[in-house]
Length: 177
Length: 177
DNA sequence: GCACACATGTAACAGGTTACATGATTTT
DNA sequence: AAAATCATGTAACCTGTTACATGTGTGC
Image 1: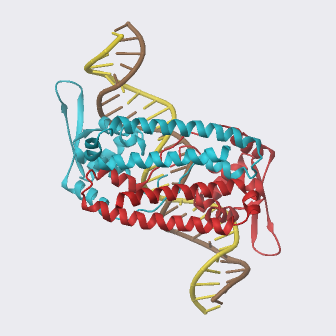
Image 2: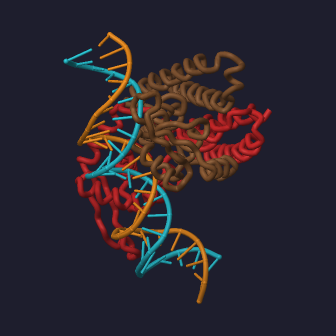
Image 3: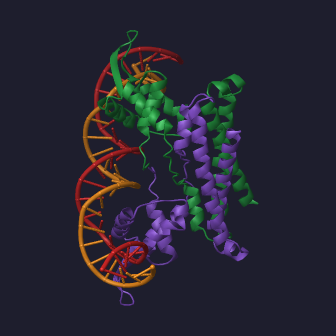
């Protein structure tokens, strides 16, 4: 699905912050980055093997603090170059936003269709809930100025997501009137 | 990639409006529906074969007006049932919005990073252009009340896209200040 | 003792993109 | 005559999802 393969960049970007295991990366996708990107653990492990094969990351396996055996990955010079060259590039191409509700709306031609109100109610519930969740996250992560400054990019993204979701909710509210 | 297979629904929905050829459907994706969904012609033809195999559409091949041989598809009772049952369902699950610019922002921790301004400028240019395009479409397709009422769903979608894009542009503008 | 989180993988399959292929008709 | 558009398909490949698979550590 995504036409552009960005997973390698995400993994390099995350590993660049500090060395990580596949499981650490999986966790990142469940919390932080999960707000705007998703991937399954199976795909992470596959991609890590590929990146290591390319020499863009290197691994060290061992028992750290005599617990379970883990494999830590750290970024190499080559990997850092690839990451930087991506961050420097302007090649972004706008992709379409695939939204199932919007799709249904398209096929409901009439504003009197009885299905419209039900769909709207449900979508409103879901979107409102999502907005609440995002606001909670913002409160949790960025309640102080220091927190915002320390992770400016992440703050901006969360702010963006909140604005987008709020606009979505407004749009739905107008439709429901 | 979409985790949910919605292409069959789109094709059924489009064919339900009127009988169409694969090429007609391809054209739909380039104009109307292309604003919020994309697919390649190879995929369309494959999916049409599958839908016909399922008995959800049926085809008639022939020379219409002694030109090129075309294959027209029309929806069957079974296909219409599947379409309706999808339109009636509330199973929408919110998927994450994968946006490359947002991803880069995440990895640029500092607001002083020199790459930030360049990326911003470029993204602003692209988004502004997209917004202009959407406004043109609205003007072209829905300048009269009748046009809006005749295709209410489509109008709502375009309105939504414009709001979303406007919010994106506002967000970028605030960042650039 | 049991459930849950930690930790890492493989295999089968489905969906989507890119490239390959071909040929007719219409427009410049 | 050449180029663009109409019209339909196949094949190779890649990404991502789902399911299968296994084993350890920790908290109740």
